[in-house]
Image (cartoon, rainbow, N blue to C red; front, side, top):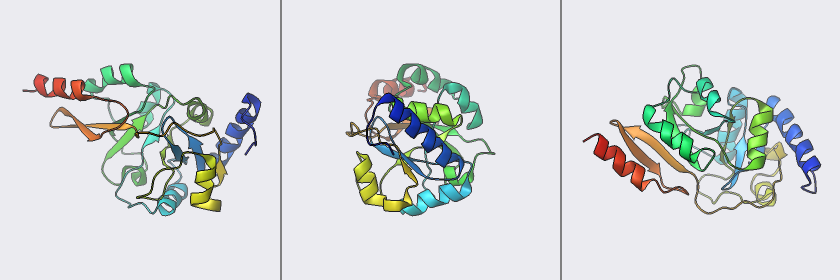
Length: 211
């Protein structure tokens, strides 16, 4: 981990982070909200390690970050039409959408729910990490379940110690509310977790259109 955050240093750090991910490691990285924990979702041992580190229940899915909408085809069976306007308006952004998961997606990621949460982060370091990785990565919050997520590299290190294989230091994050999580139930948009983005108008419109 570089001790300064110059562009060249960050670039080297991102390359190091990608190397760790490809070797089955756990990488902490900054997002638009808090620090997240990234692993290659296809690496079962890495996913298992994240669940253990966070003391997270196995039936709670891990959300994924993608670089661009074209990568949704690697994750989901289909894109619900009602999501198209939301994707256009809010991605990149703090909006996580729940999709039907492809059967080939690691079932650890879905928590055996058959669904997967996905977003595109607007944070430049997170974006570049996913871009250089070339495939989706996990972005579960860097915290032990029930505790506040880490806002800095120092907080990540204090919480997890050597359990994290690499910390990508992007400075202190904005914190505040986490990403808004939205799903679909009975053809209606459904708010699963309130967050940074207020979708009250979109939710009301979805109900009206299905009445």
